[in-house]
Length: 477
Ligand SMILES: Cc1cc2nc3c(=O)[nH]c(=O)nc-3n(C[C@H](O)[C@H](O)[C@H](O)COP(=O)(O)OP(=O)(O)OC[C@H]3O[C@@H](n4cnc5c(N)ncnc54)[C@H](O)[C@@H]3O)c2cc1C
Image 1 (tube, rainbow, N blue to C red):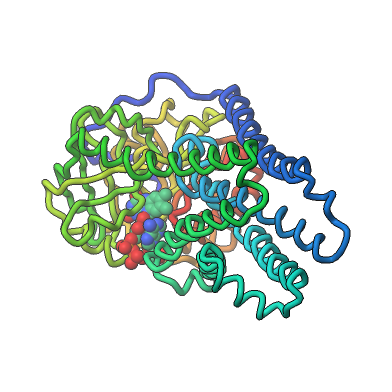
Image 2: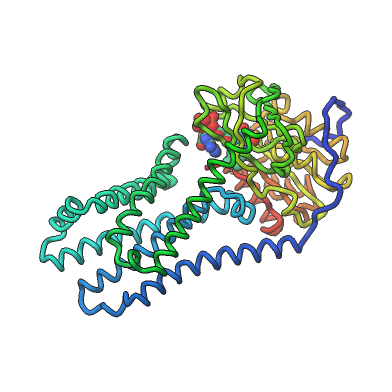
């Protein structure tokens, strides 16, 4: 452990810190009211589709096994489709949802919905075939073959089901860990395809939509709402805004043996309204990489002229980005994330980063509204001499009077995120208290690999930092 209040002076240009503190409990109330509203709309949509099923006499017709199966398949189809649209919206990174929940929470809810939706679709599928088989006096397999070979929309619906099964299976942690990000991403793109493939059979063979004005208007509005959100926020607006601003790489600077800072410049960059701590989905327009976008956090407070990223060499593409040329065109999608000062509630702040988790922490440290001594920065690295942004963090700490603890070296054990220190026998929680005695009464921003972030959170809970004061950004998908 090193306590650095260094004298090293660099030509580092910093923006002025935010003028006033953003300690605002009212912000929390506003955010949680908006969350309640969005969640209520989600639940209401499920109640609504159930209601349209009931007023359409869905439950009245139940009088034997075949009609019961038919009612179940109709209801499960309606609820599953509604949930599927919600699920797509959650992962679509639309800004109004992202600002409410943040990417990590939206992704977690998206993942939780995956299995229930699949089960509902499977029940729907089984009940459709079974009820038709009873009505036609055939066995289930024969009925299935007849249905998919004679009704074209059911072939596409069956393909959609197969795609959904693949989607859920590839999302299981054990399978996902073995997949390359690109393979997993492609499968998820097929997920959008699965929804498109399933639409025709809902309209042509579904008894709950066609010819029923209330149901028809609801479903058209729901599909349009989700579709237009994705089309505008994910596709059109990044292309339009990046084109209008003429975004290009203006500078590439080596930060360490395996990281570079890439500055993107263009007209009126301030209209992105970016906050330190946020990230963009960045697409460098080169012959080979224009179709592959990656999330990167801004690594310096944004200015009117430029936004800077710091990229570690962590895989195939980030290795290539180490040598990217100034002048390369860029498309930025975002900004995203709630790892910002807006979520702060206390005067004291602790910023904790590991490795390439440093960029958002570096940007926050530059811009945060704080007096001398109110901010402690903990930077966990393998090698102090080769840690990206360590010099800049040191200079910011020096100029602003923040505490900086750079912890370097190997972990002392698999369970610990601390290196070997003089307090070797103490737990991570005790070590943390030694570094930052007021940590339980501070807002804590943590950014780094998943395992690191989780260990830090465990230590924070042990020392008594309340959940709502812990802000974390996991560099994971
Ligand atoms: C919100 C967020 C902010 C991030 N900010 C930064 C940053 O400021 N600087 C930085 O260097 N890195 C950052 N990352 C991680 C960075 O996006 C990945 O390291 C990068 O996309 C890897 O691409 P690759 O082709 O080189 O890796 P691959 O060869 O495809 O894989 C290498 C590793 O990177 C992970 N990875 C691959 N693609 C992604 C992806 N799209 N999202 C997340 N992880 C991925 C894989 O799980 C694997 O462990 C951030 C990630 C997230 C989610």
